[in-house]
Length: 144
Image (cartoon, rainbow, N blue to C red; front, side, top):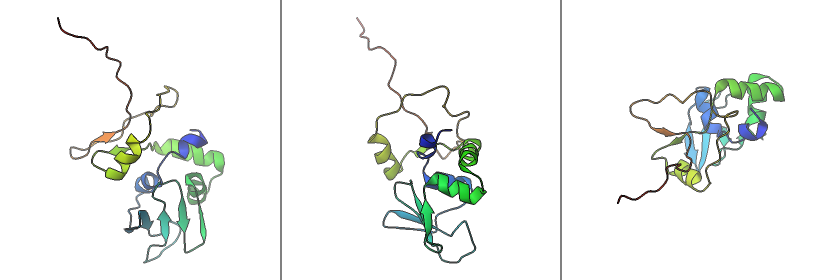
């Protein structure tokens, strides 16, 4: 995984994969109990766009790579490998207004077979996930 690909992963998706759930939402920011220490009141937040985090209890923050390096105690390359091993990609849940608006405001990226996800996300009967949108390759035709 490249660093630009890693930075496209929403912090919410990473924390979810690590077993952390939001404690509360305030002004579009998700607040969690800190993954770095025991606490009873959430002091760890991620920004609405999911690109950054800040731990008010320690006065430290950064991007997803900074988090992975600290949480897993690895260097930069180790962080990229860890994210690759976790196989996290940005899932857009149907019905999630914030995800849909962010999703529809950007053009679909071309799929590169070298960087495409190795497996599909697990889907339950009650959840549907859009993992990729691409232009249709079906030619328009008319019936005579």
